[in-house]
Length: 287
DNA sequence: AAGAGGCCCTGATAGC
DNA sequence: TGCTATCAGGGCCTCT
Image (cartoon, rainbow, N blue to C red; front, side, top):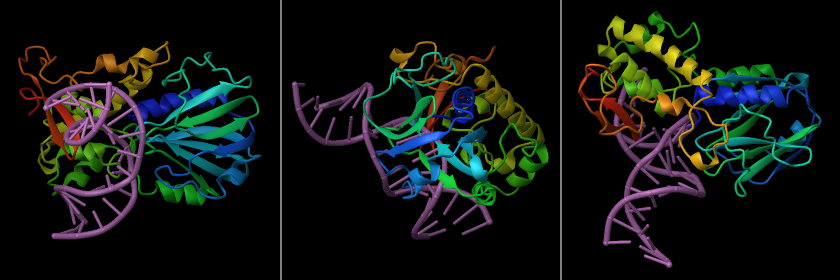
């Protein structure tokens, strides 16, 4: 669920709340995340200072003292919670997109900072933490990841050349992090709707105009979602002004059998599975 | 090389 | 009421 916009919102929150703080203690309750938490994880982080927080596609990057790094991927169900020093929930942080109520289960990692405590919760454990002892190792990790839609490298020539002789459909490519990084299943459907491109269309058959639209709307939609604080698609009970609101802007996602929202189009939103993911599109205006 | 499919995992929900 | 089946999805992996 957390795609680029949601991760960006978390990044902004962390930037406000934990930057320049020193890590006092680290507790790992369950090491079996998507990748096993390394044995030296706690020792490595303890006494290091968080000097900067950045984001690359769906990854959060904690820049630590001595030119070291820790990356966090939220996977499908990962959320970060901050508690203040008295262990009460930090509700002053209005930009957090996840529930302000700390779950009682699946709190796998706790990082005690000078002024607060960071808790990583992840029921499905598709997320992970990974430490890097120098910048070279960090860059090597990101070497296999394609450009973000917001990046200049994601330009018409890059996309056009990438798609030569590619028979796979465009929806799968938008989810392929080697081609473009940061888009997930929800925004992939939304982007293609705005482009009026059928998700099954083979990449090699996309016209230059199609490619221009893909580049343009990828950027526009992700930026708009960031402005709206991301999308929150479940647990509406827990909303207390901390959730994003881009879900209210969805044109096709989870709108199966409803009318197409394009003016003058009388099509219906269709749901089809593409590479094991639900895909929503208008069967009439997306060609 | 490209592409298809499997797998990891838990919680919510549907159907009987 | 309680069981089982299905779905949700990010990314790495193997196999063809």
